[in-house]
Image (tube, rainbow, N blue to C red):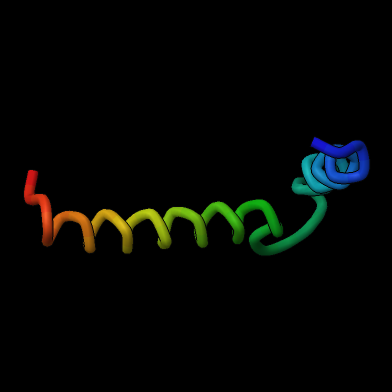
Length: 49
């Protein structure tokens, strides 16, 4: 991980308490989860388990 990215993440972690609404990290997490659920649904049709 690049240093700039690490600093950005650290800054985001630091001001999660101060900002209102979902943080960028939370939005990304929700997006990832939605994508994973979509994939699982598509796979589930082909491989029911």
